[in-house]
Image (cartoon, rainbow, N blue to C red):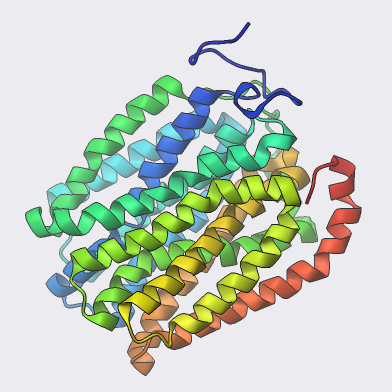
Length: 414
């Protein structure tokens, strides 16, 4: 008999069933909503950066660091959240993280942020929102069998579309009410999603038994873990680094207003977010390695070319292409992670997510430094394009071993 929307569909996911009947749909929706709103506030300093910079008199390097700190804090906290997920379960871990973010934003709104140091402190609090990655994905993933991991992780991970909301609405709200008021207004949707999350989310019954802390870092003894982390530092690092930096790029490079720059950024981020589940589904069909090969080639070419663009339209077109590739890559990598590390999915999500955050921190901060030292963003884009080529070389190096070892053992395309 078919179950209702609110009933458990399967205990941990039924292999061989269709996607929608193989897992727990309310939990998948809750994971998406939590991830979506968390990502919205994680990058909110990017769309607000032009107004904050004008109010506090920040240099290009300070602006780059301001938007990069939430990314780095989120990267480090993802490891903490990965440990919490495996110790106390993803639902409770997510509840704790959401309360911290809501309380932090409320205090920042009430007290005000009046210095560069204050923006960095706020960035650390926003890092808890970025660390939602290590909670939302295992919350959804544990309900689905191997053949549907790409789609499940892609749909939950599509919550990074929250960056679109920040780019679309934060500049306009800042213009109407002031940028500090945006921090308080963000608490409203965050609270509503927290209530929905507590009602809808449910931990899968197949959660592994807690282990000693040292055991959580066993994956780091394998080269595969480091390769997956490196690849994600490029795909997700490029995505979130651009999401945080593009409002600054468009205002500084083309003298656009913060609102118009937000619209341009939203178009780019929407493209990258939209294709994440498609990247997971594509990887399910043709294998994550093949999908990533195309991703790295397209992203490298687009990022290498964008610095030389002299019009808004041409730069925007290349950014959209780059984000489409990077978003596809994000979904493809998380088709691979559960195949190789199914028993350590919580901590591996945290470790891989941490690497992605570090990549985003590097890109966002390096663009600000490049602008201050050379007067142009182009060196920052060129270096990151080169890192993408390095990642492609690494993928070509390991793909044969992956396919002949754990890929063959799992019987799933990689």
